[in-house]
Length: 368
Ligand SMILES: Nc1ncnc2c1ncn2[C@@H]1O[C@H](COP(=O)(O)OP(=O)(O)OP(=O)(O)O)[C@@H](O)[C@H]1O
Image 1 (tube, protein in one colour):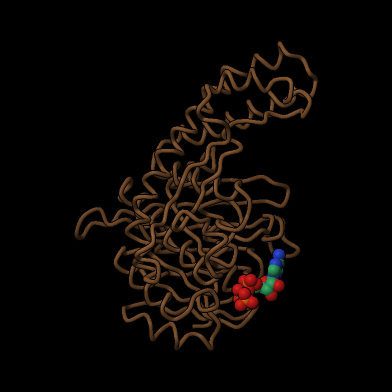
Image 2 (cartoon, protein in one colour):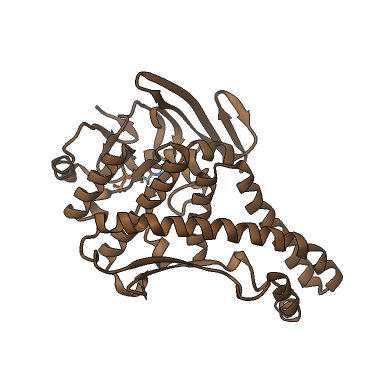
């Protein structure tokens, strides 16, 4: 799948812009502050309903405007010379309302749009997957589960778990045992479902990683890399029993101490935490291999390639990593959007030895 047309309105310094991207490789060039990343933000909003940075939606909306909109036409080659087009759109307002359109019809949930539109982003924040707290890794794994399972019910399982956990925590605050126990059967069931889905996907991701990591990082080809699911409770014990055992403590702490909401994934090299071993550049390559492995799983399950967005690619990766990334991504036939400043364009074009489109951006407008 690739975006064949993109229309952006009122996203940061872009008042209105229409682009017809190349099916595989797009380089967005401009000076600092020209609006390159804003194009990537617009694509990200379509796939996730939020910024790829830590910006809130209201911060993405152009100064003085009350909403932003992004529309895309995405094409899929269904056979050698047959292309199927789909239209997607999202409107987000400052006051928090969203309107989602698929083929011109209103959709109820963002997950309906996201399921059609798998986007992978590699930005300066991507290292958070290694460095930041477990919630970032859980979010990544759950996003992958959602795209691999291809089941809209998956989003409902996560939503319900959050709701039930919140209700149970409310009951814990009141300290009423009977009320707390009302939530336990549903919590146990959803906890089990989430654990099962996460465990399966981490195992599959681990196995893809064995192939991709050496392609991106030759230095550690002899060293075993491992992704391990670390459950947020003692998995030797029955979860129901654990909730019972922890009840007094949970009432004191006013929150549920054990469960999927405490899950994490350990990334190790030679059984040592990646976080403590790898340099910053090496960590970026590890994350890149992780993202490529994730894409492979999505691709296998959906026959639908992911759309990649790389912000300021030359600042993030060295020449060798760039070469490897472009080569692997090109083999996978992904649609890619890179941003870079004018001075880095020759370097990037030297590494990309296949057809691509270049879009020059100035003051929030295309200039080529
Ligand atoms: N809500 C907003 N409304 C209008 N302009 C904004 C808003 N938020 C940010 N901007 C401005 O939009 C411009 C484009 O930002 P963007 O991050 O897209 O630039 P860029 O080309 O990627 O720059 P760099 O190379 O420095 O990363 C910046 O000047 C930024 O200050």
